Image 1 (cartoon, rainbow, N blue to C red):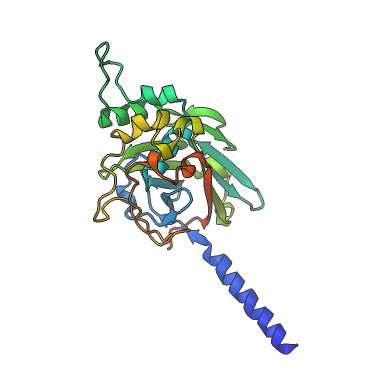
Image 2: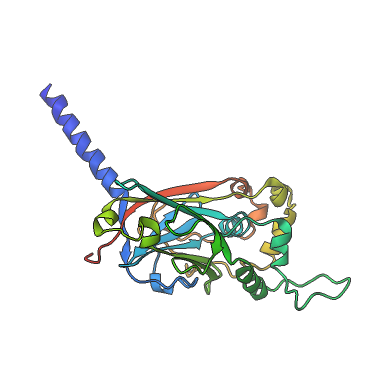
Length: 291
């Protein structure tokens, strides 16, 4: 009986340690949410399901999130189908708020992003895909987001909102960078106290999947509408063979290892991942500046 009792104590201790290891502490740093991730250094987490590298940080005024696509498939889903990010805090006041960005696109909307309307192709000619033009047009066309649950913002608002700011861009290795800055007062409320910010916060990320009509029959090499505009140059730079592209840190769900982008996600046997909605959760506590 005594042995069983001691065994139960040991098991409880082990479970407690495992549970605690699932809660990370955000970095203490100021971030300018501009789609440039240089200030983050190496992102601390990687998730296998979504194929996203990500980081969490905060300062005295804001909570910051950064996501970086590790594969072409993840980038395509993010750009075309959109992503939902939810922050929830189960403390006494119970806060939960979400951001949907980018907003899901139709085939035509995505196609329109590929070419400049100021320089249309000649009649009867096939327009040339320009990677830089595509990126500039994509950024210019995605200026709104859908938010819910924030104390001072709900519905469709500008990505340049003073309290909730979102920006995307591409790094030198052609990885898509997605940054968010959220004012603490927008999440906790204007009159929040330091005690309100001590509880665990759960980050829930949902990366939507593309419809089968958009991806086509990948196994037979039929890329459908998504393939032509994407693989033709969107991520042509990809990662580098020496690992100079996407790096994770300590890792969540995958050890934070570098994942080289697929050469052609539309012709992969794993095309089901493009059609499947993927998600992950990560618990964290805000940094008080002492760590």
